[in-house]
Image (cartoon, rainbow, N blue to C red; front, side, top):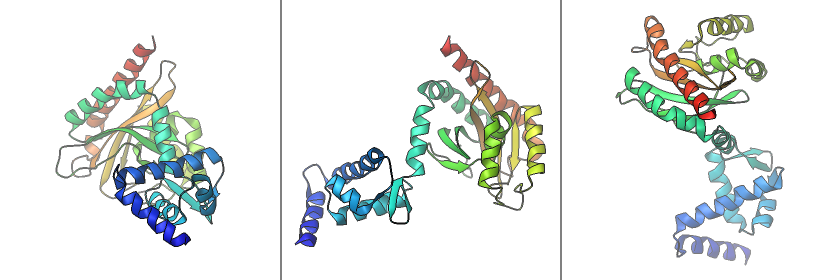
Length: 267
């Protein structure tokens, strides 16, 4: 009878008066709430017992959440995924950062013609908290909540240059060769970090993805502490190394505007 009851519950989910999609969202939220409240990884059977959902429903929701990186699995146990954690960090970045950065990010996108984003750090990763996509037909596309490793990108270089713990986090995670241009020697990485620290901005060409170039600069709080990085990213045929200095003027200028707006808001 258990299978029949589970199937009936699934049909009720689809035919519910609030609509199947709404019920699925509610049940997914119950699974996430369950895991968040448990404070430890749970087996599927424990999720079933704590949520009261049929096992077939739990299994289906867990599969979907895993595919979307909203859950992670270690053996038979499930826990909150990196994407949810990234959303939490993005929210904790504070509305002040988003409010101050929103118009400046759009302005930089328009002046550079390239996709522009603002990022915060989470361990050895950077999390996108704001993005303005380029209107160019060939362009890099970003999304709020997107998580990528610090290593191999201009944003990561900014964090390693101006947020000391970031460098060790990257080394602990490993210097992975994403492309032939990726830096895998710690000494070379340190030399690059020092260069970024001296000039106040970073340019990375094809180290994360072949053909993708990025320029980034630091956003600081009133005390001069790094809080975020702003960057423009685009294809190599538009963002060439000789153009890096010109683009850096735009990016550093935008970073300064956001930093000043944050300081003004803190007065």
